[in-house]
Image 1 (cartoon, rainbow, N blue to C red):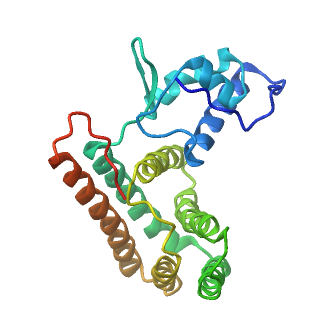
Image 2: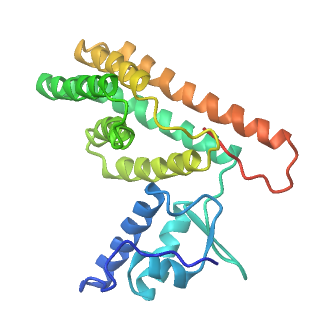
Length: 247
């Protein structure tokens, strides 16, 4: 297994075992989001320890939590395998996302203040203008994705339910793995994404719950259809151990 360099300090922080376990989980998630851990990839405990920059004990103790979240599996004689992307994962992840966000949107349209919605709208308008003006903005895609997902997470967190927020964040990692595993992956289509979000934000500002929920469901359904169609096509190609590339 290939050794992976750690982006963290070689000296682990001096903290309690419980905090080290939590830090190990957070750092693992960061590596998934950064694309340094790929779907289906095998990694040893030792390599993962070096990558996270934490003691082996902390990494060993966090593995059951990662397995429970279906972010990795322990494969005898082979090591730890990052979650493999297949049709079942895609369907489960998008179904859960739809269920959570439907409730989150309904709550947010009633609870968000006019000031917060105005700030969200301005941030998207500014990003749209930035995309229209820029042809060589190296940070545009990253910043647009952060703004995009930031709105989704904000709506879920607004329900003030830590259990739901935690579940949603794990599911977001599954969605990220699906996208990382995509041979259709391209820089974010910032212009249409921002226009789509602004239409949704307009429904929020109008306090139109039915329209806001419908627009969000359309957004999630369209994304799901794209990845399922691609994954289904690859399975039909007949690979014995398909590495599903979805986008």
